[in-house]
Image 1 (cartoon, rainbow, N blue to C red):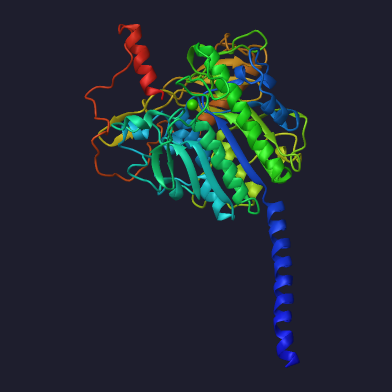
Image 2 (tube, rainbow, N blue to C red; image 1 turned 180 degrees about the horizontal axis):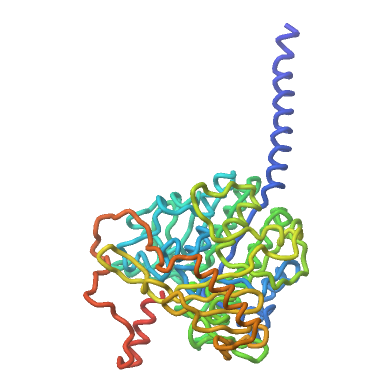
Length: 496
Ligand SMILES: [Ca+2]
């Protein structure tokens, strides 16, 4: 009887011990596998971030991340949305993935980012036990055809603007009355401001998964056009005031995310990365210390490709540091993988390398001796489907000091000394100085080791849809004799 009476107590003790063991196990897993919150603003350069010297704005929450973290001066994205996203998702350059130009999948159809052909950082982190979520903007799949595309790309949960779906006008909205795709499907959120929904979704995910390692990807809708008033500044009217309101709202959302990490007591083991996908768009560029940066969105000048890039994690990343180390977005997948103890995808050639030791204070530099950026403007169609505008996309490469430009063929057309000529105005291509000749030799060797013709996007063919862009008999280029207004309109339509 006594024996039988003790039995439940023994089970209880055993259960208690197992709970303790599990809790300890979870804790050590969490410590070894930091959370990663990767925040990427759309279309914003250093000219609108105050800790990078922007004159006309204050971004206190972003600045605090820089003060307490590691601030990069030489981090390159690609010049435009699609190449940037494909690069950071895969760890491969656009000439390898084939996504060298902008291709707005829900708008133009035909091709899409196919999970059968590309491994994303979400898949990599998921394989290492991470909970994965994305909020904001995707645009490289059509959720009408592939409602589960994000799960197939490695995300457990999502709340993203669909991108404009041709033939579905409500889908044009990413801000007010946002049209958002979640696991429950796509719909309009009447009178709601999309950026609040994306941010709230991530906060909910953090609360639900705080005891698991989390990989949170926040490709923001802000601050891309259309320029709109925000909930905090509903009365702004001019384009510049709207942009400033949107930047301030971006900063507020960053602050909300960081204070949620504090509240959940996971800030010390969450690596927050703040960056942008390309430089500021068109005529709304700001100034840095009184000077307008060279180039913006779509440009290969530093203003188009060299982005704000800040890493903060009080428990893991020693703060108060700035670095000239080189990195580009191909390095993100291997860096996330190293931070999370994930295995790199098998049978895939990565172009990037992990800079985790630099973040963690174990190295002074990144492993990169040169970085690369390429791809702007819309891709096109030929009989085989979506392809780059040209066989060889124009591109730039740089090392710590020199930068070279290539235009549509694997031949260097310009060499700049970024140390003495940051605005890239004095082409040294014909210089006979030994240091310039040595730089050219080095870059020619790198270019010579890469294909002379870019890859094509890989995707399994699917049935035609009514909104698929049609093959044009002739490649249409912006002609010099077209009215300026028409060129502008066309450019706007291709850069959504
Ligand atoms: Ca962009």
